[in-house]
Structures are given as structure tokens and as C-alpha cells.
Amino acid sequence: MRLKGKTILITAAGQGIGRASAEACLKEGANVIATDINQEALQKFKSDCPEVQTYVLDVMDSNAIKAFAKTIPNLDGLFNCAGFVHNGTVLDISDEDWDFSMNLNVTSMMRMCRTFLPGMLEQAKITGSSSIVNMASMASSIKGFPMRTAYGATKAAVIGLTKGIAADFVKKGIRCNSVNPGTVNTPSLQGRISSAPDPVQAEKDFIARQPMGRLAEVSDIAPMVVFLLSDESQCVTGQSLSVDGGVTI
Ligand code: NAD
Image 1 (tube, helix red, strand yellow):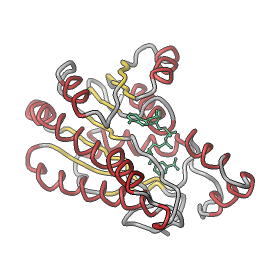
Image 2 (spheres, protein in one colour):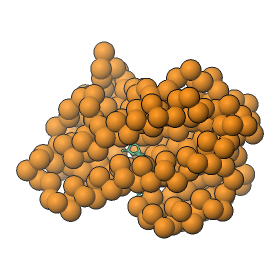
Image 3 (cartoon, rainbow, N blue to C red):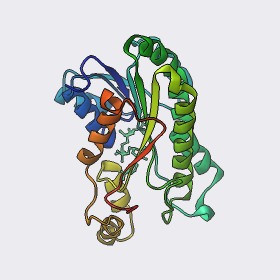
Image 4 (cartoon, rainbow, N blue to C red):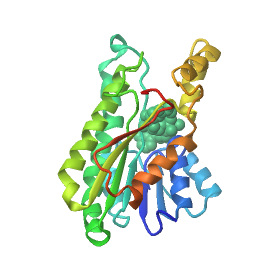
């Protein structure tokens, strides 16, 4: 039980990587607060795993985040997972697309960190350590991918946000790291594949980006999240850890 007694909040936990990570945290004994904008997905999660606490939270809603924070205990762990993939080159990015991507992928994480950090600092005074994990991507400052300019810019910003928080609070028991997956088989990836002009070729192209010759599964990413939320990683902060199927060999 590597997370026994820890209270961990996860965003975008209704499906995909967020839900898999939430389930992995439950298995390791954490009290998991799973949040998502999608009530139906949370209801399904709750019926599959009655021990999970669920809450509908739009991470783009500053007031809702503040109100929610007042209702829950101080956190030991926060996993900011919510994010959106814009598909296109720089020529395809409207001002609205850019603002939406920055708001959902970056500003929401800053708001979550800003809101929950004071409680995490209090908790760290008792336990010695609290951990923030932010979802970045290989498409970021690490590597450029075709049609991912807006997305890559937001995820590069997530890495910067992560390092800044780590630097400011390293002496106060707060660790902050990001996870950078390669291409992961999730409902949103399946959506990107099925909306491509040639879905069969699109899936082949996604797999071809992975030197291991397969898509990552959510079960490949969740163990890294658990590690970063656990005390096993207590000497790890400000890092950007890749789980990329060999993309950056
Ligand atoms: P997914 O689309 O399968 O699930 C995303 C979840 O986010 C959904 O349950 C959705 O309801 C929720 N969500 C959307 N907007 C929200 C909001 N405003 N507030 C709260 N919740 C909201 O996603 P996924 O593929 O598991 O991706 C999760 C994260 O991992 C994202 O940040 C994504 O950028 C990142 N990522 C994914 C991949 C991949 O290949 N799938 C690769 C690298 C990084």
C-alpha cells in the first residue's frame, strides 16, 4: 500500500489516463477524489469503484475550483491531468483555439496549483512531503510533432510551470513533476483516429511514431503517476519524466 492514508485529487479522472491513475491510486490505499467535467463518466467510475469520491469540476471554472477547495481536506497529492489536443499547424490556429488550449491545458493547472498549494503546504508540515503531478506530453519542449503546434506550446508551458513550482517550494516539502506520455490508447485518441480521413492509416501512423511498435496503454502511464505521488519519489522534483515507448531514445 504505497499511498496508504494519502488524500489525492485527480482532474479528468472520468476516463483515459486520469481514471486509470485514479484506480491505481485506490489500489495503493489512497483516498481518491476523482473530478471531471463529465458527470456520466464519474457515475460509471463510482459504480465500478464505490470507494472513490467523485465530484463534477470544470477545471476552467476558477470560482468552482475555489468553492470545491473549501469542502475537502488538505491534499497529499494533486494530479492535474485535464488537457485537450488541438489538431493543426500554426496556420490553422484561431485566436479562440489558442485561448481555449492555453486555458484548459495551462491556466487551469496554474489555478489548481495556486488553490490547493496552501493546504498541501500545511499537510507537508505534518507529513514532510506533498506531491503535485502535472500532465505534459512528448509534444512539448521535448519534441515537435506535425499538427501539434498549439498543443505542444501548451505542454511546454506545463513543463515550465512544473519547474517553477518545484523551485519555489523545494524547501517546504512540496515536490512538483510532470509526466510526458508518448501516444496513449485512450478514448480521446480513438476519437482522433476515427475522425481522420483514413482511420486505418491514422492508427498505423500513430503506432509508427512509437519505436516500440505499439501504442502505450493507460496502464503504462498510471504506475509513473503512482510513483511520483508516493514517498518512493521523495528525492524527485522539478523533473519531466517520459513514458514514451522509445520516442526519445
Ligand atoms: P481523454 O480525452 O480520454 O479524457 C479526458 C477527460 O478530461 C475526459 O473525461 C473529459 O471529460 C475531461 N475533461 C475535459 N475537459 C475538462 C474540463 N474542463 N474540466 C475537467 N475535466 C475535463 O484524455 P487522455 O487521452 O487520457 O488525456 C489525458 C491527459 O493526458 C491530457 O492532458 C492529454 O493532453 C494528456 N496526454 C494524452 C496522450 C494520449 O496519447 N492520449 C499523450 C500525452 C499526453
